[in-house]
Amino acid sequence: SQQGEEDPQALSIQEGENATMNCSYKTSINNLQWYRQNSGRGLVHLILIRSNEREKHSGRLRVTLDTSKKSSSLLITASRAADTASYFCVKETSGSRLTFGEGTQLTVNP
Amino acid sequence: GAVVSQHPSWVICKSGTSVKIECRSLDFQATTMFWYRQFPKQSLMLMATSNEGSKATYEQGVEKDKFLINHASLTLSTLTVTSAHPEDSSFYICSARSLINQPQHFGDGTRLSIL
Image 1: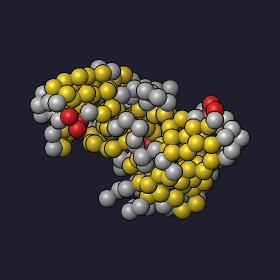
Image 2 (image 1 turned 135 degrees about the vertical axis):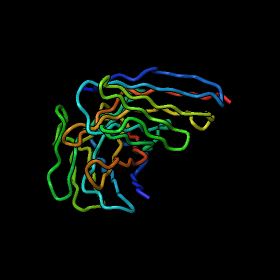
Image 3 (image 1 turned 90 degrees about the vertical axis):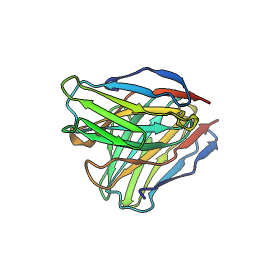
């Protein structure tokens, strides 16, 4: 069964705006990863944040992790139409097991 | 780097046919490969985990005799859907990882349609 929730389920913004997606989880994690998926395609790894890290940046992406609240957020700054995709929060727990959230469908309108 | 190739990308076949899907890590050695299934507008569901040279570990509810997994080398894993039926139609995605605590790298998926 899937663990945790992602919100929002869908997000529609204008190009240039920032997009924030949130994810929560229930059990302890080794790390948390964010992936994107274009429709009908495989997943592209965006960023991995370990359980002892609080914030990580990669280009226009900023990920935070709050282990006390068991939550993470992904911020995409200065969004582009090409950022339109589904974004998944993926929790890695003991035994290297990955658990996927339900995903956030982001639409960036030109 | 870290490219995973999945083949074929799309299969349409008749009910009762067996279908083999290949997953290759092109520029790294994948000690562990994973097979997922995804229904439309839903998240990925892990089907099985395979370590090179070992039998795959299947998730609860996944029939091992229905979904045969072979991981004979550090760069290739195959998933065979045996005697496929329309309910097996889905999007199947593989991923590969070199080391624990490293990200998984995903193939582009295979869309399987059983008529």
